[in-house]
Image (cartoon, rainbow, N blue to C red; front, top):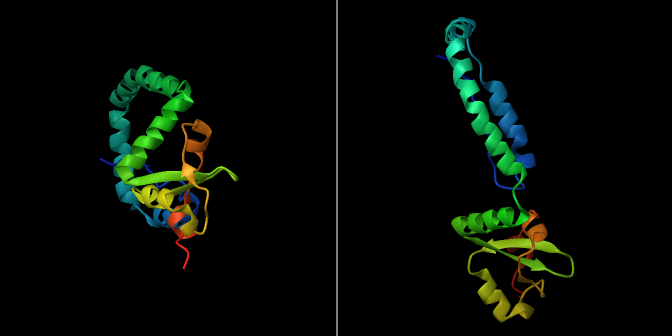
Length: 148
């Protein structure tokens, strides 16, 4: 049987940088013409069953799409918080600019104890504001460093 599957995932904010390599990889994949013909023939033989199976999934997919479209901003925020916990990171933001920074978990305790020792003072814990949680965080460890 021959199936063509597409799947793509990348950390938030990295897709643009990784896209050329992903496209080059995808373009390098080649199938022989005989293999392709055989797969098309078998696929055509399976089509009635596939169509029936696909039709039975339509209501489920429609329900999932509706739930996604009707989700609340607070749900997105909760998902971001959970992802941060799983990834072992935390976010701080600079109220003066609204920029959000991501750091390894535990960084905020050291920073908040002595913010004047860092190149960017004034960072605060990210409040429960869905607009801030939707922002792509900047890599805080490359921007916020200890002063020499």
